[in-house]
Image 1 (cartoon, rainbow, N blue to C red):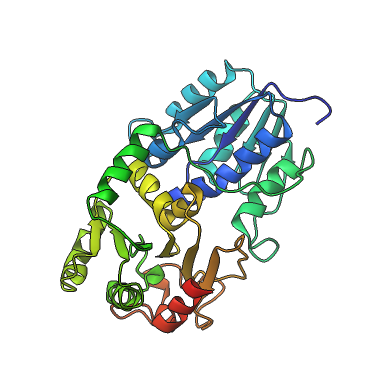
Image 2 (image 1 turned 60 degrees about the horizontal axis):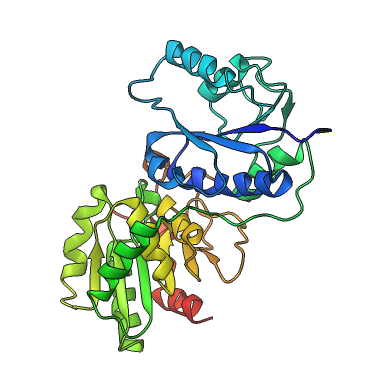
Length: 340
């Protein structure tokens, strides 16, 4: 772009992990144009993470599966967004709904991913293909590269308010940690992405043997309470299950010395919150990811159903209570990754 935009709209209404990847795009826009207003349109699931983000002027919450479902709601949203007179739109969500919204926006420069109708949604398009660009962050930064230069990939970032930070410190101090703190993130919306609660529990047990003054925090969301008995069986006072809102979880993850999780949004939340080392386990979704050190992607290395055909349970012929590819990641290998 020849002129610096006064207002930039970034769109990503996808899963939590996707929105966290998009925070790097927000950071790149801020670095390129320090004085511009940056607005982010996202879904309710990401509301707690983007509100108060240090780079955002405003977070727009679009309830596409609820009260704002339907084409009429998209038209009303477009009318409201057009009142802001944005100069640039970067659409990081490749859905028809997002493309349709962009086709209604009176923004002179609109960048997105190609797809089915509507025609004219974007003035510029960039590939959205894992075979071309497997890195989720780089694929989003390509949107910005279509109109300007990107000097370096910014890190994932969420805003952690003082109140959440203080609450997390109080929660952690209540368990009197003396040694290191390990975060464990055993959940995922997809069975084929889960390493298995039993393996995470065994990892916690072995890590505590090696760190006799350490504490393990097990983060369980509302849909993951069924995993609680697996960790209670350990009968270990230094294994603490966390049932807190995302903002408090982010603050707690920032205090962990390391974290291990599945390919899921909360693992990327740990990176965005500032956890020093995050190990993310990959099976059916493994690609040649290269995380910024010391974070690390740990793939199963067992391409039974790649590139992505095993992403969902209905597509995975090996799933029988647990995905086979994830079972190929040995506990010792994860411990080695934590030590290295």
